[in-house]
Image 1 (cartoon, rainbow, N blue to C red):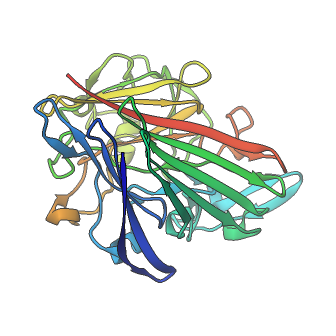
Image 2 (image 1 turned 180 degrees about the vertical axis):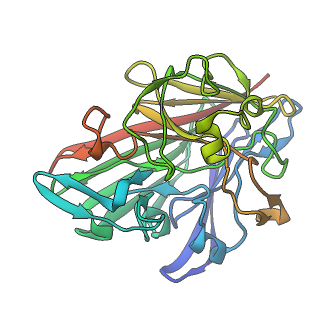
Length: 347
């Protein structure tokens, strides 16, 4: 319905703009051209009040550091790569190390730190098209990768993220968005009473560095069983090794089925807001903000541990080290394409 472009600030990489998209259903998104960051997402609750359901930072300087990747596009490779190394076509590649001895979310200067070329389009389904060219050896990854990401506010009252990429060499590509959701409102505190259902019967356990071990385990009889809706807080502090290891949930879940399908449904009893997550990916990372730094964020809000949850659609983490995992290899000239939608309703 409408789009507004605002100057947001000047980063080391250049001027940053915020694009405000609104649709006729009352959904409103604020998206930065730096990192494709979803800075705010307003959804009408059961009483008609608009609630901002994503966590965010204050000014441009905070987003340049953005150690929690709040709202950002993640690439070239989302999640972790052990020791920052992988083998492809007999060659060994070493990529940016930024978490202990491992690579996380694209390395030291991933896609979240880049200023993307942006074009906005008005209409019944307003959209923001972003493009980034990641050159050969960017953070150590092979090939020049051209990435296009489109954010669309849909008539169904959803935010659709369409990812597309092509490379001039064989490479790896695993893109996602790292929004932190709190359906009670970004400043409403712990998410323990918010209800989550995951379409997943299996998860990948982690080692003490947060790296998948290579196992794929059943969720049956564990805190990881979200097949029936349950409050996120029910098992977030469970006496279970994998939960205690990360202080909540920070795990990859294999999603049932193929094609574009429902991954998860989350809801908040206080606001009545329900969010359905749909994608055509193979997996999703559930992260419950276990390591979110305490402090002041946007609108003067104070955030901390377990103040949000992330549902990062993806291929399996560190899949290059485990041949039985769905992998991120993108061959020269082939098109990487995937879609994720966050669809909102009220109860």
